[in-house]
View 1 (cartoon, rainbow, N blue to C red):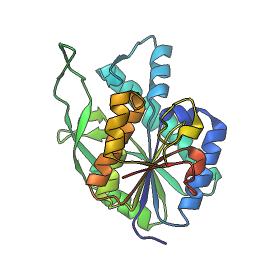
View 2: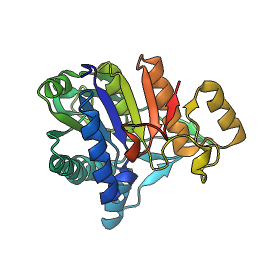
View 3: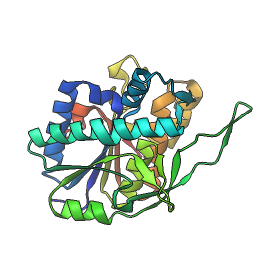
View 4: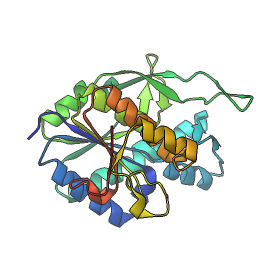
Length: 261
């Protein structure tokens, strides 16, 4: 077994389908035969659904959630509460000794409040959104050494004890770098990068920065995939040797995945 861990990030959209979760945890169980595994999850759709049930409409600016005090409460309930617990329960059913926690636990994820951004001429204060300042991976290393599978919700904390919402892709990348992971796997609905989003046959087995810039210019890379690739390149820059974008059922073979390099 490789002593360097594998960090797997899965988005909130995928967590709504029970069958997808079953396939995902089967894949994680297989990965765990190769190396210790850390799972980081999103939860944007679940937080939005809960907000709407409470009569609150979250504000999203260019795909980024403005996090008011109420939004932060909702994210805690949805991510660290129901969703994280459900993921742990599903993992345990597959024989995986999962432990649910947030980035704030043990001071793993130290953040600073994001400064306002200027977007299309408007100054946007994102509220309780944090940017990663420091990662202290001791708790994760302790759990991995004990044979556990940490399942991490993307909530960080600052030096004053204030909690913050943090982008889950960014959290996963930061943890992978701090743990010196040998692989970073970004799990998406469509799998890897496609030249034609609607055509699985157009999937690219490899994507480098030149291909990325071409895709941006020609318009077939954008939205969520653009963000995934930006994070993937950050992971490479931080010394992680293997970075893939792939589907939940391809964690082991990676035959229909895109390796980023």
